[in-house]
Length: 298
Image 1 (cartoon, rainbow, N blue to C red):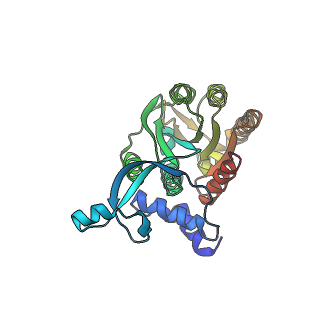
Image 2 (image 1 turned 180 degrees about the vertical axis):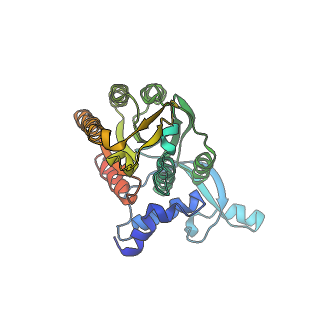
Image 3 (image 1 turned 120 degrees about the vertical axis):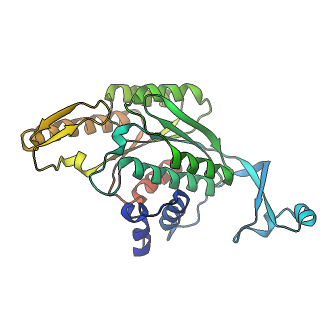
Protein backbone atom coordinates (compact mmCIF):
# COMPACT_ATOMS: atom_id res chain seq x y z
CA UNK A 1 0.00 0.00 0.00
CA UNK A 2 1.43 3.38 -1.00
CA UNK A 3 2.18 6.34 1.25
CA UNK A 4 -0.89 8.32 0.18
CA UNK A 5 -3.16 5.40 1.04
CA UNK A 6 -1.63 5.12 4.49
CA UNK A 7 -2.18 8.82 5.03
CA UNK A 8 -5.84 8.44 4.10
CA UNK A 9 -6.19 5.46 6.41
CA UNK A 10 -4.68 7.23 9.42
CA UNK A 11 -7.55 7.47 11.94
CA UNK A 12 -6.37 10.84 13.22
CA UNK A 13 -6.51 12.25 9.71
CA UNK A 14 -9.87 10.71 8.95
CA UNK A 15 -11.29 11.93 12.28
CA UNK A 16 -10.84 15.53 11.17
CA UNK A 17 -13.24 15.07 8.28
CA UNK A 18 -16.80 15.91 9.30
CA UNK A 19 -18.81 13.89 6.81
CA UNK A 20 -19.16 10.16 7.48
CA UNK A 21 -19.91 9.64 3.81
CA UNK A 22 -16.61 11.24 2.87
CA UNK A 23 -14.77 9.32 5.58
CA UNK A 24 -16.17 6.07 4.27
CA UNK A 25 -15.25 6.83 0.68
CA UNK A 26 -11.72 7.95 1.52
CA UNK A 27 -11.05 4.99 3.77
CA UNK A 28 -12.34 2.44 1.27
CA UNK A 29 -10.80 4.02 -1.80
CA UNK A 30 -7.52 4.44 0.05
CA UNK A 31 -7.57 0.81 1.06
CA UNK A 32 -8.46 -0.42 -2.41
CA UNK A 33 -5.53 1.45 -3.98
CA UNK A 34 -3.12 -1.14 -5.33
CA UNK A 35 -5.59 -4.00 -4.93
CA UNK A 36 -7.25 -5.77 -7.82
CA UNK A 37 -10.85 -4.97 -8.54
CA UNK A 38 -13.09 -6.92 -6.19
CA UNK A 39 -14.39 -10.16 -7.74
CA UNK A 40 -17.38 -10.24 -5.41
CA UNK A 41 -20.55 -9.04 -7.07
CA UNK A 42 -24.14 -10.11 -6.83
CA UNK A 43 -26.60 -10.24 -9.68
CA UNK A 44 -29.65 -8.04 -10.17
CA UNK A 45 -33.01 -9.68 -9.72
CA UNK A 46 -35.46 -6.96 -8.72
CA UNK A 47 -35.77 -3.30 -9.66
CA UNK A 48 -35.74 -1.08 -6.57
CA UNK A 49 -35.53 2.61 -7.51
CA UNK A 50 -34.07 5.31 -9.72
CA UNK A 51 -31.27 7.67 -8.79
CA UNK A 52 -29.67 10.55 -10.70
CA UNK A 53 -26.86 9.62 -13.07
CA UNK A 54 -23.40 10.35 -11.64
CA UNK A 55 -20.06 10.62 -13.37
CA UNK A 56 -18.55 7.17 -13.70
CA UNK A 57 -21.83 5.28 -13.98
CA UNK A 58 -22.13 2.91 -16.90
CA UNK A 59 -24.22 4.22 -19.81
CA UNK A 60 -25.86 0.81 -19.91
CA UNK A 61 -27.54 1.52 -16.58
CA UNK A 62 -29.34 4.67 -17.79
CA UNK A 63 -33.11 4.35 -18.07
CA UNK A 64 -33.67 5.82 -21.52
CA UNK A 65 -37.46 5.70 -21.20
CA UNK A 66 -37.26 8.01 -18.20
CA UNK A 67 -34.85 10.23 -20.12
CA UNK A 68 -37.33 10.47 -23.01
CA UNK A 69 -40.03 11.67 -20.63
CA UNK A 70 -38.00 13.95 -18.37
CA UNK A 71 -34.94 14.90 -20.44
CA UNK A 72 -32.85 13.95 -17.40
CA UNK A 73 -30.52 11.01 -16.83
CA UNK A 74 -31.52 8.44 -14.22
CA UNK A 75 -29.93 5.12 -13.37
CA UNK A 76 -31.81 1.99 -12.41
CA UNK A 77 -30.99 0.60 -8.97
CA UNK A 78 -31.64 -3.03 -8.12
CA UNK A 79 -31.93 -5.06 -4.98
CA UNK A 80 -29.21 -7.64 -5.19
CA UNK A 81 -29.67 -11.30 -4.59
CA UNK A 82 -26.22 -12.05 -3.22
CA UNK A 83 -24.56 -14.87 -1.38
CA UNK A 84 -24.02 -12.54 1.54
CA UNK A 85 -26.08 -10.54 3.99
CA UNK A 86 -23.94 -8.66 6.47
CA UNK A 87 -24.92 -7.21 9.84
CA UNK A 88 -22.73 -4.51 11.41
CA UNK A 89 -23.17 -4.61 15.19
CA UNK A 90 -22.05 -1.36 16.80
CA UNK A 91 -21.63 -1.05 20.57
CA UNK A 92 -23.08 2.31 21.69
CA UNK A 93 -22.57 1.94 25.44
CA UNK A 94 -20.97 4.80 27.35
CA UNK A 95 -17.60 3.07 27.80
CA UNK A 96 -17.14 3.44 24.05
CA UNK A 97 -16.85 7.22 24.45
CA UNK A 98 -13.51 6.97 26.27
CA UNK A 99 -10.50 8.49 24.55
CA UNK A 100 -6.94 9.14 25.67
CA UNK A 101 -6.22 10.99 22.43
CA UNK A 102 -8.14 12.59 19.60
CA UNK A 103 -10.33 9.63 18.63
CA UNK A 104 -12.72 7.83 20.97
CA UNK A 105 -13.47 4.16 20.56
CA UNK A 106 -16.98 5.07 19.42
CA UNK A 107 -15.77 7.55 16.80
CA UNK A 108 -13.25 5.00 15.54
CA UNK A 109 -15.95 2.33 15.29
CA UNK A 110 -18.40 4.70 13.61
CA UNK A 111 -15.81 5.49 10.94
CA UNK A 112 -15.01 1.82 10.46
CA UNK A 113 -18.73 0.94 10.34
CA UNK A 114 -19.33 3.61 7.71
CA UNK A 115 -16.40 2.41 5.64
CA UNK A 116 -17.49 -1.23 5.83
CA UNK A 117 -21.05 -0.28 4.85
CA UNK A 118 -19.69 1.69 1.91
CA UNK A 119 -17.58 -1.28 0.84
CA UNK A 120 -20.53 -3.68 1.03
CA UNK A 121 -22.74 -1.38 -1.03
CA UNK A 122 -19.97 -0.89 -3.60
CA UNK A 123 -19.78 -4.67 -3.94
CA UNK A 124 -23.59 -4.89 -4.31
CA UNK A 125 -23.91 -6.78 -1.04
CA UNK A 126 -26.74 -6.37 1.42
CA UNK A 127 -25.66 -4.71 4.67
CA UNK A 128 -27.57 -3.81 7.80
CA UNK A 129 -26.79 -1.82 10.94
CA UNK A 130 -27.49 -2.88 14.52
CA UNK A 131 -26.78 -0.46 17.38
CA UNK A 132 -26.82 -1.99 20.85
CA UNK A 133 -25.98 -1.33 24.49
CA UNK A 134 -28.24 -2.94 27.09
CA UNK A 135 -30.42 -4.14 24.23
CA UNK A 136 -30.82 -3.58 20.51
CA UNK A 137 -31.56 0.12 20.09
CA UNK A 138 -31.65 0.29 16.29
CA UNK A 139 -31.94 -2.35 13.61
CA UNK A 140 -31.70 -1.40 9.94
CA UNK A 141 -32.25 -4.58 7.97
CA UNK A 142 -29.77 -5.39 5.19
CA UNK A 143 -30.28 -3.85 1.77
CA UNK A 144 -27.92 -3.48 -1.15
CA UNK A 145 -29.08 -0.33 -2.95
CA UNK A 146 -27.01 2.83 -2.72
CA UNK A 147 -29.67 4.90 -0.96
CA UNK A 148 -29.51 2.49 1.95
CA UNK A 149 -25.99 3.71 2.66
CA UNK A 150 -27.41 7.16 3.38
CA UNK A 151 -29.75 5.61 5.95
CA UNK A 152 -26.83 3.95 7.69
CA UNK A 153 -24.73 7.12 7.65
CA UNK A 154 -27.63 9.13 9.05
CA UNK A 155 -27.99 6.67 11.93
CA UNK A 156 -24.26 6.87 12.66
CA UNK A 157 -24.37 10.65 12.73
CA UNK A 158 -27.40 10.78 15.02
CA UNK A 159 -27.06 7.74 17.26
CA UNK A 160 -27.54 8.15 20.99
CA UNK A 161 -25.20 6.66 23.57
CA UNK A 162 -26.56 4.34 26.25
CA UNK A 163 -25.20 3.89 29.74
CA UNK A 164 -24.34 0.28 30.47
CA UNK A 165 -23.78 -2.80 28.35
CA UNK A 166 -25.51 -6.17 28.15
CA UNK A 167 -23.60 -7.50 25.20
CA UNK A 168 -24.62 -11.12 25.57
CA UNK A 169 -28.32 -10.22 25.86
CA UNK A 170 -28.15 -8.08 22.71
CA UNK A 171 -26.39 -10.88 20.81
CA UNK A 172 -29.04 -13.42 21.82
CA UNK A 173 -31.76 -10.93 20.89
CA UNK A 174 -30.36 -10.44 17.41
CA UNK A 175 -29.58 -14.12 16.84
CA UNK A 176 -33.28 -14.85 17.30
CA UNK A 177 -34.26 -12.17 14.77
CA UNK A 178 -32.05 -13.05 11.80
CA UNK A 179 -32.89 -16.37 10.25
CA UNK A 180 -30.92 -16.52 7.02
CA UNK A 181 -27.25 -17.38 7.36
CA UNK A 182 -25.09 -14.28 7.07
CA UNK A 183 -21.95 -12.48 8.20
CA UNK A 184 -22.10 -10.84 11.62
CA UNK A 185 -19.44 -8.17 12.23
CA UNK A 186 -19.14 -6.91 15.81
CA UNK A 187 -17.47 -3.61 16.71
CA UNK A 188 -17.11 -3.21 20.46
CA UNK A 189 -14.70 -2.73 23.35
CA UNK A 190 -16.25 -5.90 24.86
CA UNK A 191 -16.23 -4.42 28.35
CA UNK A 192 -18.77 -6.81 29.76
CA UNK A 193 -19.10 -10.25 31.32
CA UNK A 194 -16.95 -12.52 29.15
CA UNK A 195 -19.10 -15.59 29.78
CA UNK A 196 -22.16 -13.72 28.49
CA UNK A 197 -20.26 -12.44 25.45
CA UNK A 198 -19.06 -15.93 24.59
CA UNK A 199 -22.57 -17.31 25.04
CA UNK A 200 -23.90 -14.76 22.55
CA UNK A 201 -21.15 -15.54 20.04
CA UNK A 202 -21.91 -19.25 20.31
CA UNK A 203 -25.58 -18.50 19.62
CA UNK A 204 -24.62 -16.83 16.33
CA UNK A 205 -22.48 -19.79 15.39
CA UNK A 206 -25.26 -22.21 16.34
CA UNK A 207 -27.44 -20.36 13.84
CA UNK A 208 -24.71 -20.95 11.22
CA UNK A 209 -23.70 -17.30 10.94
CA UNK A 210 -20.11 -16.39 10.18
CA UNK A 211 -18.81 -14.06 12.88
CA UNK A 212 -16.04 -11.47 12.80
CA UNK A 213 -15.20 -9.59 16.01
CA UNK A 214 -13.38 -6.27 15.95
CA UNK A 215 -12.32 -5.73 19.55
CA UNK A 216 -11.56 -2.01 19.66
CA UNK A 217 -9.65 -0.57 22.60
CA UNK A 218 -7.84 2.63 23.52
CA UNK A 219 -4.03 2.45 23.96
CA UNK A 220 -4.34 3.48 27.61
CA UNK A 221 -6.61 0.50 28.20
CA UNK A 222 -3.88 -1.79 26.88
CA UNK A 223 -1.00 -0.63 29.03
CA UNK A 224 -2.68 1.52 31.71
CA UNK A 225 -0.35 4.40 30.88
CA UNK A 226 -1.60 6.72 33.62
CA UNK A 227 1.26 8.25 35.58
CA UNK A 228 -0.34 10.18 38.45
CA UNK A 229 -2.76 9.40 41.26
CA UNK A 230 -6.22 10.41 40.11
CA UNK A 231 -9.95 9.95 40.52
CA UNK A 232 -11.10 7.25 38.11
CA UNK A 233 -14.76 6.95 37.12
CA UNK A 234 -16.54 3.98 35.59
CA UNK A 235 -18.32 5.54 32.62
CA UNK A 236 -21.17 3.05 32.80
CA UNK A 237 -21.81 2.59 36.53
CA UNK A 238 -20.63 6.01 37.67
CA UNK A 239 -18.53 4.44 40.44
CA UNK A 240 -15.46 6.52 41.40
CA UNK A 241 -12.18 5.47 43.01
CA UNK A 242 -8.98 7.30 43.94
CA UNK A 243 -6.18 5.17 42.47
CA UNK A 244 -2.41 5.32 42.34
CA UNK A 245 -1.72 3.71 38.91
CA UNK A 246 1.66 2.35 39.98
CA UNK A 247 0.04 0.23 42.69
CA UNK A 248 -2.33 -1.60 40.37
CA UNK A 249 -0.61 -1.47 36.97
CA UNK A 250 0.82 -4.99 37.14
CA UNK A 251 -2.42 -6.54 38.38
CA UNK A 252 -4.36 -4.63 35.72
CA UNK A 253 -2.07 -5.91 32.97
CA UNK A 254 -2.35 -9.48 34.24
CA UNK A 255 -6.16 -9.40 34.34
CA UNK A 256 -6.46 -7.55 31.04
CA UNK A 257 -4.22 -10.04 29.22
CA UNK A 258 -5.98 -12.97 30.86
CA UNK A 259 -9.29 -11.72 29.49
CA UNK A 260 -7.80 -11.20 26.03
CA UNK A 261 -6.38 -14.71 26.03
CA UNK A 262 -9.75 -16.10 27.06
CA UNK A 263 -11.54 -14.22 24.27
CA UNK A 264 -9.01 -15.34 21.67
CA UNK A 265 -9.18 -18.95 22.78
CA UNK A 266 -12.97 -19.11 22.88
CA UNK A 267 -13.26 -17.40 19.50
CA UNK A 268 -10.78 -19.82 17.98
CA UNK A 269 -12.56 -22.81 19.50
CA UNK A 270 -15.90 -21.72 18.03
CA UNK A 271 -14.57 -20.56 14.64
CA UNK A 272 -15.14 -16.89 15.32
CA UNK A 273 -12.61 -14.54 13.73
CA UNK A 274 -11.15 -12.23 16.36
CA UNK A 275 -9.21 -9.04 15.56
CA UNK A 276 -7.81 -6.73 18.24
CA UNK A 277 -7.78 -3.11 17.06
CA UNK A 278 -6.25 -0.11 18.74
CA UNK A 279 -7.75 3.33 18.05
CA UNK A 280 -4.38 4.33 16.60
CA UNK A 281 -4.43 1.44 14.09
CA UNK A 282 -5.05 2.22 10.40
CA UNK A 283 -8.29 0.79 9.06
CA UNK A 284 -6.55 -1.46 6.55
CA UNK A 285 -5.93 -3.95 9.36
CA UNK A 286 -9.70 -4.35 9.70
CA UNK A 287 -10.31 -4.53 5.96
CA UNK A 288 -7.77 -7.28 5.42
CA UNK A 289 -9.41 -9.25 8.22
CA UNK A 290 -12.80 -8.79 6.56
CA UNK A 291 -11.51 -9.81 3.14
CA UNK A 292 -9.87 -12.90 4.63
CA UNK A 293 -13.19 -13.88 6.22
CA UNK A 294 -15.04 -13.18 2.99
CA UNK A 295 -12.76 -15.40 0.96
CA UNK A 296 -13.55 -18.30 3.27
CA UNK A 297 -17.28 -17.85 2.66
CA UNK A 298 -16.97 -18.94 -0.97
